[in-house]
Amino acid sequence: MELRHLRYFIAVAEELNLTRAAEKLFIAQPPLTRQIRQLEEELEVQLFIRKPRGLELTQGGLYFLQQARNIMDKLEASVEGTRQIAQLRKTIFAIGFVPSVFYGQLPLMVRRLRRNKNLEIVLHELKTQEQIEALRSGKIDIGFGRVHIEDPDVEQEVLFNEPLIAALPASHPLTRQMPTMQQLAEVPMVAFPAGAGPNFSDIALGLFHRRGLKVQVIQQVNDLQTALSLVASDMGFALVPEQVKKLQREGVDFVPVADDNLTIPVIASRRRGENPNAAMRLVNTILIELVENRLSGRYP
Image (tube, rainbow, N blue to C red; front, side, top):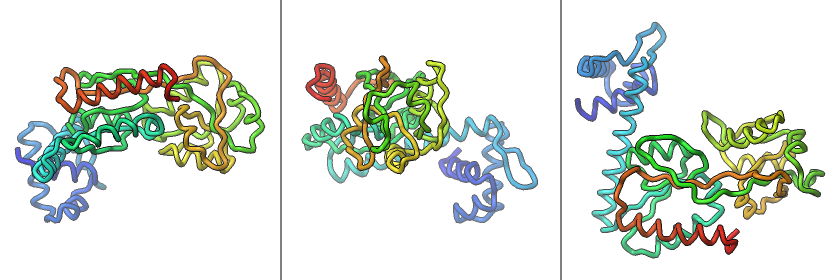
């Protein structure tokens, strides 16, 4: 098996059409068909179900697609890291993050890391599930997210639990008080991110469901900035981590919620069982200080 087999397979799996995949790869369709058949023969597994209007991945094909993407991501990260090290003679340290943690102390950590002339810091905006996959492939070295995800190759550490607050339209009556969850449940909700869980949206909605409250989700969006734009447009409210109030978004008021135990974790994800190199030891040292600042109230 060669790398071209993986590239060809991924293209066909994404297009589910041999003609479109061949055009994407700039090759003719018959050689592509032969390469896919050779791959299936070598694996002794049927990867695709041939149908009159295209292809469908088998269960084996779905699993192999995930593995093939991991291999290609790891190869890409290795090639890019090698090039940068050769050019800069620096250690590449890649960080994955969900946007909501970047309004807190993470920029301080990045700024301190960048002072080290031997480090090249690379940032990737990734959902927590994407961070797990990126850690496994070697694309990132550490991830900062909000969701617990069980994975045998990744360990997660809760750095601290952060209060959740309500982002409400500035003109809304509930901005004049500390609303309860029951009061918020009567207002349309903007949830984020959209897409398959587990994600922040699942956590936020779960807080209502566990209290026996039904909430009307008026819109699901992919990112925090869009959610706040919809709040500013008076479409509804959003639950957001406390650090987000640093944005001071026009047309949006950030209000504490009256209910107790309304928190969400900030979670660091690392590869399990890996001996920390010098860069990771520096990151861990900075994290200990920043978390202590947070817990002691020296940083909101």
